[in-house]
Length: 99
Image (cartoon, rainbow, N blue to C red; front, side):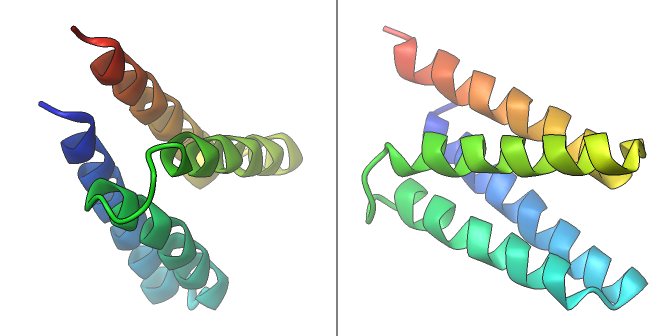
């Protein structure tokens, strides 16, 4: 498994989550935010942007999800997305450090 595959998987989950948020709650903000976050990740995984974009986007998402979780105190969806983003960042870090 490579870091690119992990980023592609996370990107897919982001888009699916945005579409689900739009379909369930008619939240255009969820759809726009998920696509806006997914685009730089996909471009990086495809090799069109430098790697440093991945930790930048994942770090930004951690901050956003942590703030939302603190504000709402509801695990879904912010808490779950926070955990998923942290796991993705950890896995990417482990894979790039792998000899």
